[in-house]
Image (tube, rainbow, N blue to C red; front, side):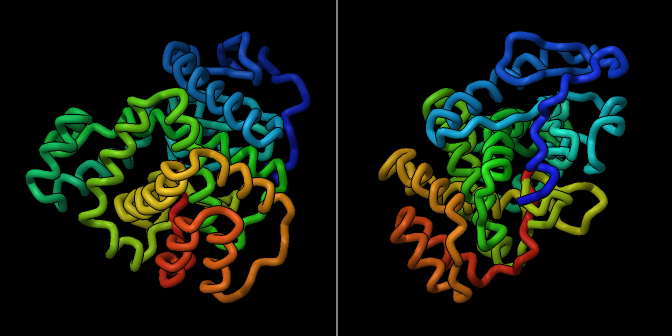
Length: 308
């Protein structure tokens, strides 16, 4: 677990010197860049749904402040990633952009370039057209849903959950995302699902090449930072492959395997060194779908994408 994530936001936020606008009446502190309060309210409501859903499921209460920032405020509160890349800071802040990361436009361009025409048409029909690359899908709606993924990472880190492979931390957060969206935002789950199904045409090469990268917190995320070599399109394809795998578990048994996984990860039992043994352990203790993911990702490089 990242030492920074172990420091809950227990001290009051310094509003007077922050220049940010407070958003009261949430179970965690919420602050926003002053011209983006409406966007922050929507993000905070999504985060609140994830907070309550996962708190009930896991029996664990995370401590954090949600900061929704514009590019001007980002350098003052963030820990260095490119604008829009969600991350948890040493000060206990869950920092997200008031607008999606620019890398999402490059992801859209990747889909427009590589998907079969019929598949791309179906994707654009669901998501609309990207404003920068109009042949590709507008992924802003998918980006908006990912706050549940980030809240799951915060919970796992603060609870001391250990994952013996980096891709497992991402799969866990993606499972949490699916569980939260299924109960709170079926339309959001549909958007994620259509993208995941379209990615079936493309992601084998991405998994083989790797796309998951490291971050200061040692976990993984959505589009990678602009100063890193990882391809944002390949990173997202890997995330979508993980999402399809955990969705199999959700479709079969809903959130029960996720709760078992959280408890097992907190127990921090020694993990086998061999990937095939890890797959058997996941299939037995969590769900067979996780065992199948282990078989697939055992051949992928360890430099996996960080989620945003």
